[in-house]
Amino acid sequence: MTDLVLLTDINVLDKLVKIITSNKKKNYVIVSDSDYMKTISRTHIVRSENVKIVVFKKHFMLEEKVVKLLTDVKPDRIIDCDPLNKLIYIKKYISSLKVNKINCVEFINSE
Picture 1 (tube, rainbow, N blue to C red):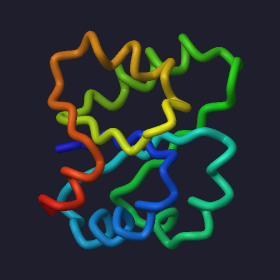
Picture 2 (picture 1 turned 180 degrees about the vertical axis):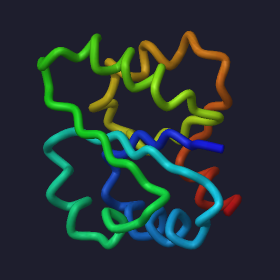
Picture 3 (picture 1 turned 135 degrees about the vertical axis):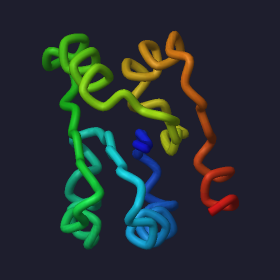
C-alpha cells in the first residue's frame, strides 16, 4: 500500500513525521515544492526506509514529471497537505484519478 502525500504545509510536518515513521508497513511518497525541501530535509523522515521524497521545481518539465510520478507510484490514496495550492499542477492530474483523496487534517486525526 502506497500513500502519496502532497506536502507544503510545514505546520503539520511534525505530526505527519510521527505518523509516517511509526507506520513501517505502508510506503509513502512525499511530494513537495523546492521551496519547502530544506525544512523537510531537517526532519529524520528522509532516513526512513518506507519514504520516498520527490521534489518539484516550478516550470521545469512539470507535465512529464507528474505523469512519470503517477505511473511509477500508483498510489492507493492521496493525502493533501497543500493548503496554499503550491502543487496545483499535480492536483490537476490527480483529480482525474479514481483514488481516495484525503485532507491532511482528516488523515492526522484518523491515525
